[in-house]
Length: 482
Image (cartoon, rainbow, N blue to C red; front, side, top):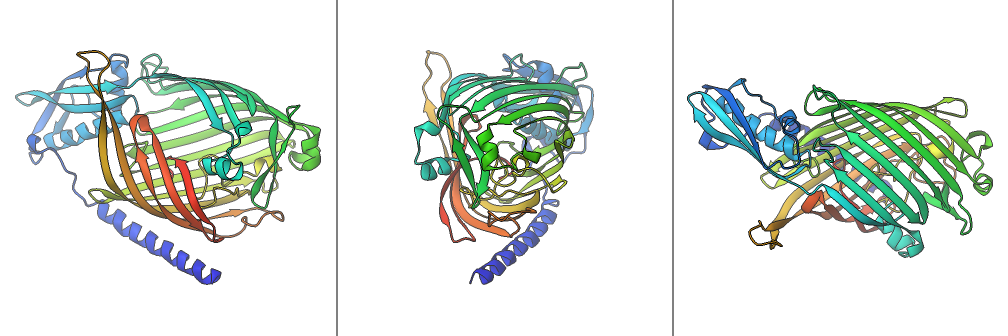
């Protein structure tokens, strides 16, 4: 029965991929829809005149102008200019700096079009208490750890987006409780007059009382010392970014990490670090590229995105790793409120003989498979394919009255999207005696509801089953790579 079920699932994904290819080919022939008030069928050329920006109390004008695909003095056919209005609105919304953006023709003077861009800025400063379970996801904390409060970290965070009005980000965090950590990072998108080069720096240090020393039966195995810290770490990184056009960003970085574990950890797993070491110092260099052409980055329903990264960790025999990772995402509208999503991921670490600390693959961060939330899959190479068919069920707004008379009311939007989904993946591990999931094809599927709200808050409720016969209700935050 299990083998027959596998064949059925493989057939399902083959059919899905064929359908996706047909849909993608058809999508290239779908004509865009424009505002009829602009008579887009006209071939008459329009000269871009004055560009007026309103509503930007904090954001610098040059940051807004950097994101739009037209400039004063340029000439376009009217139909092309209308398309660029929508491209500009979408790109400005994808900066996550604004609640709303309107790009429109302010007035016409013969063949000259004067344009007005109206934005409504978000709140950018978020000082907040920090309270979060340390487990990889909510299900693991609630079900496996019985929602134990001793597995919760507490502290404070300060997020300052658009700190200087130049779409820069300052983040500071202090965490205590289960672990003790402090981190600071600053990301400045542009540091030059031509607005192509940026800079990002980060620092993090901490200690942990409980430590994941091994993976046994496809689950993390922990050791906890209530009186002493079992590990400590230090991470420093700096990178420069290059963004010549609008949708693609390149990053070139260097990093330094130092980590140590107690002698007890080494006794439990002599291969945690290579050659019986209790600690390693690892310099690294990396390159990454991200390309995004999506209607709305936090929750896309149309478009595509790709990420590619190459990392060299270590310079000698104490730690040596060459890593390549690639992600791809596509979304296609099938009906006005229905869309298809596809996400792919692949990664490899060379050489294949790596210490345990560098075996993490599925189940860490945003690289995971639905249906295996209680498991991790360690290895050195692998990938997955995920598909989902989605339809908006309903949406509404809740009105919040203004605090002061004469101010505008605030509206909190809620959007509910139903979906069915499936995924398949594989992870290669040269030695996996203690675990079942590596070196096997993995399958899962299910259905769920995504809830999208204010400030890109996205919450996923999913019922998922896997090839092991396990099923259950799972909770997630959303990333564009599903």
